[in-house]
Image (cartoon, rainbow, N blue to C red):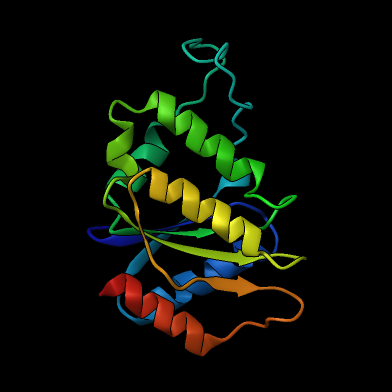
Length: 166
C-alpha cells in the first residue's frame, strides 16, 4: 500500500462503524485506508513504572510505522466523561515513550476528528483538538459530530474526506 489514510477507532461500537464509513468514502475517492481498532490492542494502562520493562511494555512498532507512513489520520472516538476515551489516551501515552522520534509521528500530520457519542460529543472533540494540536498536528477545522440529535450526513462526510485529500 503506497499511499493511505490511517483511521483510528477508539471504541468497538458506533465509532468503529463510523471508521468503516470513512474508509468506504476514502476508497470511493481513490484513496486507500487502513483501520485500527484501538480497543483490540490490549496494551496495559501506561504508567512510568512499566516504561522500560520489556516484559510488560507493549510493542508499538507496527502502529508507529502505520502512522509514519500514512498521508493523514482520521480519529473516531466517543466522549467519555467530557474527554477522549481511555483507549486513545493510552495509545498516545505509549507511543510517546516507545517511539524513537515521537514528535515525528504527529508533527505536521493532517488529522481529522470525528465522534459518535451518546451525549453531545463536543467536549471529546475539544480534548482531541487540544491533544493533537499540542502534538503539532494540522487538525482540520471541521469535524464530524454524531449523536442522538445529529444524524449521519454523507454530504458532510464527502466534504471532510475532500478536505483530507486536498
